[in-house]
Length: 317
Image 1: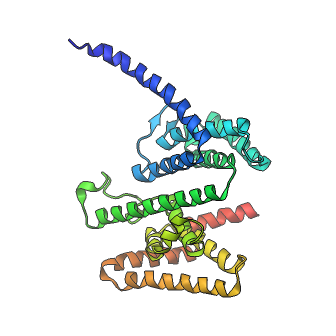
Image 2: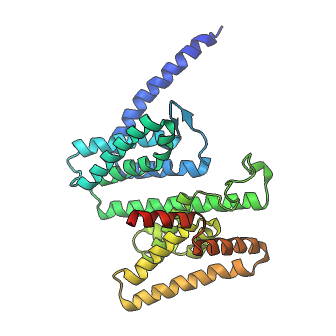
Image 3: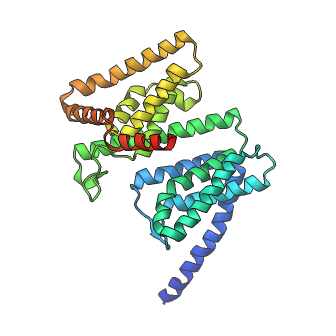
């Protein structure tokens, strides 16, 4: 007869043993292969928009799946920083930033408890992924790999946003989350602003640098759809960042005058192609009105855009 109490005793030990073997193997693979590390970072990034931030565990502080996944990446980056012979010259300013972040995180956890860890999540991701990338020599092949990874993430997010719009606006009640919408800030915001920013980055890259990678070249043919998605998601700070990127390229970037005007005309034509069906289709007139309202409040300095502009002004002062 099967002794279930014996199995319940063995199972945690087996899991602990598996993790004890898996983590070192994972760190070694991340240490050796930049391509594997790029795919690993992409998976870690996509977990939050897919799960909508659900699935955390509480171990004194709230831990989420990306937090756990980025720890082996940080360990691999630290090992490369110390041991790898092919590690590029260390950037002292960046290393100082990493040290200051670590000290700030520790003091914050001691002073404010678990809340400080939640606020530090995105900074930890930035430090871990940034340090990992800087520990490899960025050859042309690796730069193209990074850009192709960015394009793959953005196209996946575009597909995810379209799927959620269909589910919400059809509606298909059985596929909706328990709350009835994907975002309490507005049902059309089906992915986070950080995810929308990735879409905007691919959009700007595909418009101005289509030859930089194969992914950017493919996305070049989807620019009106990408622009429509960025507008419909209504993250106004992402609009501001996109405009800053376009303006920098067109008016400040080192581009030949004739080519600069051709790029500007391409941007205008793409915007017209995107806006026309939104403005004249009865089915999406509500979306267009929401975009107009969002743009008006952004220009008036209201909402999150105004708050960010004020914080940037305070930093500059």
